[in-house]
Amino acid sequence: MYPYYKVLALGIALVFSSNFQKASAQSTWQEVYTILSTNCSGSNCHSSNANGFDVSASSADLYDALVDVSPTNATALGKGDKYINPGYPARSFALRSAANCLSSDLSVDDTETPAAHEGLAPMQEQEIELIRQWILYGAPETGTVVDKSLIDDYYTNGGIAKIEQPTPPKSCEGFQIHMGPIFFEPGEESEWFQKYDLNVPDSLEVTGLEVYFNDESHHFILRKFLPGTEQNWPQGLTPLNPLTAFDSDKDYVMAWQDNEDIRLPNGTAYFWAPGTSLDLNFHMFNYHNEILPGEVYLNVYTQPKGTALKEMKAKLINSTKIGVSIGGLPGGAITNNGQPLTFNDKDGSKNISIWTLTSHTHKYGIDYNIFFQNTDGSKGAQIFDGTYNYRQGFDTGSYDWEHPPIAVYEPFLNMTDTVNNGTKPNGLMHEATYLNDGPSTVGFGFTTEDEMMIFYMQYVDGSFDIPTAPVWTSTCATETYTNPCLKTGLIDIASNTAFDFDLYPNPASGSVNINYQLENASTVSLEVLNMLGETVGSLVSNQTQQVGEHQYQFDAIATGVYFVRLTVDGAVSTQKLVYTNN
Image 1 (tube, rainbow, N blue to C red):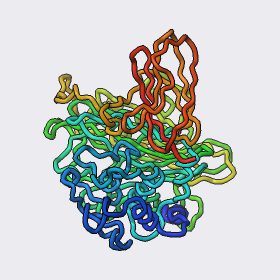
Image 2 (tube, one colour; image 1 turned 45 degrees about the vertical axis):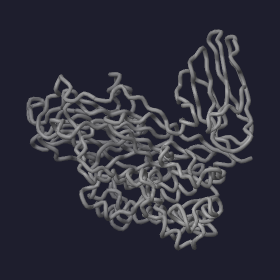
Image 3 (cartoon, rainbow, N blue to C red; image 1 turned 30 degrees about the vertical axis):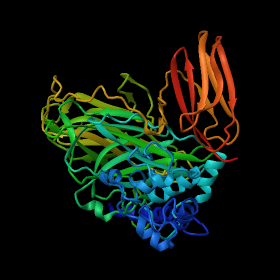
Image 4 (tube, one colour; image 1 turned 30 degrees about the horizontal axis):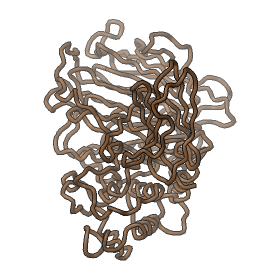
């Protein structure tokens, strides 16, 4: 890390680390222990004589029997699960088997369903969530790592709805990663990291990365640990530590400030070796006056190893020009005189072919440009304009720091050739312009009140021409996906959006409003089903309804997960409804 960041970074690190430990009467593990021993005890559940572990054991003994211990269930064992896998809720069999599909990655198949749970009332959703959060934060035996009151508040009084799980890649085309949820209090801004072991035995060729996260997110950055360096990092979520944020033990892969599906050019792929661990970096600002569950779903698309012709590489170039000098005095700071201030810096990349370029500043950034570097070190041809909309092909006239443009070069921008006004580029130059009209001088930092000067680049070594014929064709393109949490009883409740309708509030603790708009006279059915696929509310039954808005209310009998199914002229749409305690 650059030495003159140390003073500022240390202060920020202390703030973030102090916010990490939440005040509570007892440790989070003790809260989990109480939930387990209360909900599951006796001979028909987990006792000293059955089912792998004994919930009536002491706190210390039960922790040792659960955490990082392989399950007895053969299917879960074959998946590589532990009863509790620190940092990985979806790989924790004890949680999956009790979670009642709180999310789709917390489900079990028919061969995993524990007989010990038959006839038992499901845990409350806030209890399941507290266990998930404890695991997500590394499942420690001591210390308070989860704010229980925040979880209880969300599931009792409601908040911003969780984002819907997107459809994952097909079985031969990749897999899905889920980060979160992380619960953000109203007005909270914080940044989190998670080491994520891919748990794959063979090399991967990654051809695409598709991300979904909350609109309120400032960014999601994906990095890859260099071989062996992941051992230096703990399992589970960790808060931002500016002292290590720019450590050189990780390679940059991709960054997003919007939901986007990025597919690599034909013939290229990221090469991820066996044992690779990813670094997931999520920065959120909750602008709402309600609790916000922040989540990331990342679809990773792959092809068989040995298919790609070129390895796609990535680079994050962080300028040292904005910083704080030793002693805390402004050094390269952005003064608050109301006048634009421009910084210039260089990068020595040569003999590569660039696929994409994009930039990153915080709210004081008003422009960002990237150029080739001439042989004498001067500024050459411009290759990135921060005010230009590359997708739609026009200059917007202003730089949008929250949604900077992404320049995609197909064919690649070949720096091995004379593309710099008839000469070969001797590296890159970048410049960023800032306007500080606030009350204080601004320096380098990790919040939106601070600043950065960064650009990202995707490239291959040497020159490369994109093949016109596909180098690989999917062998499972006709597969369909059924959400395991929508497969209940004897029926499959298809999750789809054939016809839009509003369902609010959700989660709910009182009456739920269901609204839909008909553009034509239609035959309509509207019903509510429980997790067994049984109809618990029939609001409209095969009726002909006229054009216009139609409104209904539903009151659940008990807490739990329900499905609202709307059928309009045979087209079916389903939404999940979460019902909490009053």
